[in-house]
Image (cartoon, rainbow, N blue to C red; front, side, top):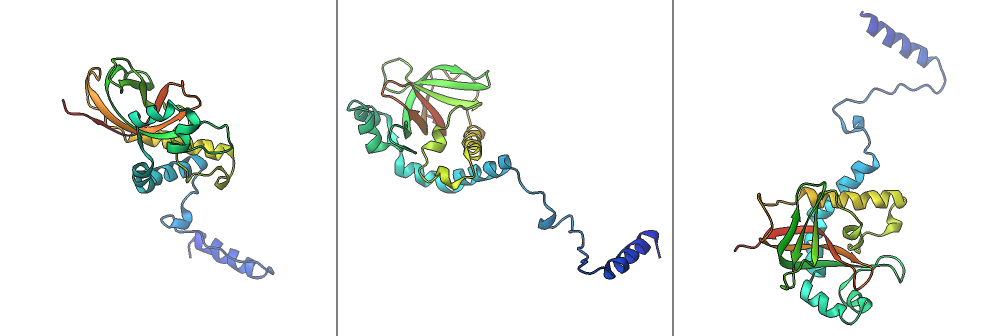
Length: 215
């Protein structure tokens, strides 16, 4: 008998003499039971990926508003536009969030910084009026807050809810497929989420879908 086998048998005999002693075998390293539990970041990353794959396409189709329609509604006030086309999580007075579709020509682009972005002229006046965040650093919680099925009280605390917002932004960046070369002068269609605290707030979009318009 090997020393390891002898020690195992001796341990089992000793345990048998103790009341309430129970031998628990080590889990198979290849089994699910042996898998390390996910931390908050990993769980939120998984949930964000599932949202993009399973819920977001239909949600966008049901809630998206085109840029011209939203501008016309905003002429009557933010609350009017928000009531008709937006999502407001939390109490009255919280910013309105919109799922937006816009098309425009790129008038400015930054592909070098970690907070890369491009600016579109979406109303045809030659001036940039809509910033698309390209990342990898994407700021804000617009994407999370524009999804009405994500309720704060369904999460453990504010930290976990904030990590979901970041995970959704990460997914938005990871799923972008930008063409090579200079973007200025090229046209794109974008669908994404934005937060508007006021009528005059700049339009800054977290992209859900982005595609180049053929010249």
